[in-house]
Length: 359
Image 1 (tube, helix red, strand yellow):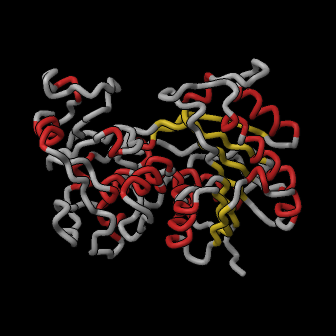
Image 2 (tube, helix red, strand yellow):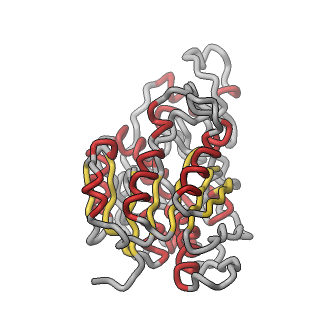
């Protein structure tokens, strides 16, 4: 039996959040998700951790009762499509109510700390009764004895080479858990990707910076690096987009497919962190140097997912799993703060400096 603090991951996806907590020193007992491909990825990349294929709404209370007072932390990233600023933002979207499943599990298990991650759009959403969703979340946890704080964190300020803003709720029964401190150095796309050769190659070149060394951890073979094949017209579009540009840089005769989101046909700028990566193929996110859409492996790097982490499924499934994931380095930074509080529950909190340092 491990003496590490224990975690379970609800709506785990491939387990980016879990991987971060593992890096921070936690023992992740299991993850639950209802997508079989994501659970296969989760199981294959988390040592001694169970991946459970299940719909949380269909698990009865007895399932959670087995873990009552045996889990230190619950982490959860309920599906965010109903809250996303890019979606329809329908008040009655059933996915918006899935945080209630987290509350149900917490009521039964009684962990010391709960972390919920979601899109920033949640903060401006109301439920079917007209109440602010964020206030409902806080009220639900307050009523069962948890102090709740929330904050918008940008992953690019916590070691991840991607501007990815998410709201993080921290609910605690053991006193306030501090949010992680911003890192001074922001990792750029070039710093993240420069030792990944084009898709015709099978091995990385030598890591040239601390971020690349951290991601490699001794791995030399490149997984999930198969490129999308583009027809001639798509290639003409790609070729004509400059670094940092998008579809608006294309002449009308080339861009006749609709789709006016600013990240459509976005070529990443090498000297900045990446834009928020959703489904890179559907959005046509272009490599800063090569004339093609980024591969799943390159997206994994931009999500701070280690090179040894293999994504299951076809190329479209791989990209969707990555789009859904919490960046492990963001999870790590949060996890270090939680660990500090678990080790000193009565001590006034101070911000914890990351042992991984700045990149």
